[in-house]
Image 1 (cartoon, one colour):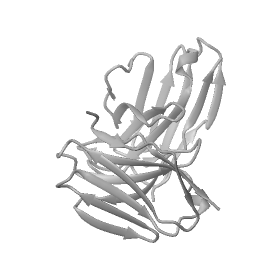
Image 2 (cartoon, chains in turn blue, green):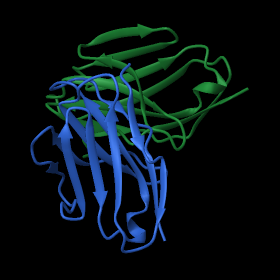
Image 3 (cartoon, chains in turn cyan, green):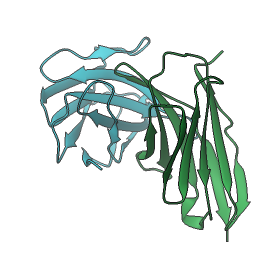
Length: 115
Length: 109
């Protein structure tokens, strides 16, 4: 299967600071990347969908000014959590797909803890 | 009614048992059906991917889709302790994938 990496794998930051998470597709070109968050013992919640070179589409209830997504190339998407607060602490996972309706390959996730 | 429903478990079975995991869905427009395995604190790993009714087998895993009943299953034969994880069913509609809540499975040696 395709390989998707995420960096960092975990991060601790202070309340009010911003954190950037990178998602890379290592061996294929991802036309679409997805960002999810997952709370303990809960399923994945889609936050936004991004296509290379265009603005991300955010799910209802997700603040686009707080969760900035950039999909600058076919192999890289970034999620920036701005002015992070403790309630933003979660497991953030990206996935990448190569075409409409195709399989999604997930990154290993990034655990964010805001103190 | 949620779009995808899945019994969260936990499900505990002895090593070597056959495991049956199930999901039901409400939207007949779903096109692709997937099963993911997620170990604790890791990203989901794609196990099975199907798009038609019937069975698909891969090693110890068999995915079954019944579109008429809106029901999908994953069977694991000869279960191993390493199969202990959360199993997520997922369905695709255009570019969006809808996940079930996941079933937690423990295989006891």
